[in-house]
Length: 133
Image (tube, rainbow, N blue to C red; front, top):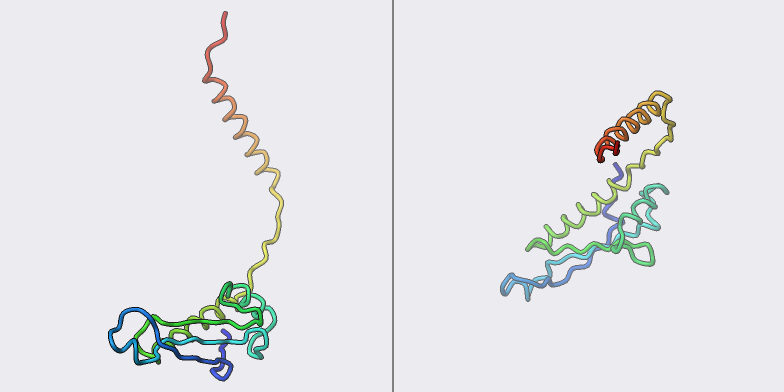
């Protein structure tokens, strides 16, 4: 599990839209977190490539991942939510995919397949009209 230190994260706070009464017009509770994935010393090269691919539309041209959190009504909870979402992305990217090893079918499995095909063929050929005598 790769842990990203908070020193590599940059936070910006702004007012969130949506319901919330007077509070929404006064308090900057929404959080935009920036993480420079391209230049991060915390990531190895494989994890970095998979993370940048998994980030999708959240990745900028400069290799920075932007995560916006507006789910909660408090700034601290939105900040924590953004960190958790980034950590989930990093955890997903840290797992290297297992390469499939190509194998060939055995002779017995080929024979079973051919026997099943011919059996099915004989069942279907018996469904037609009987030949005229």
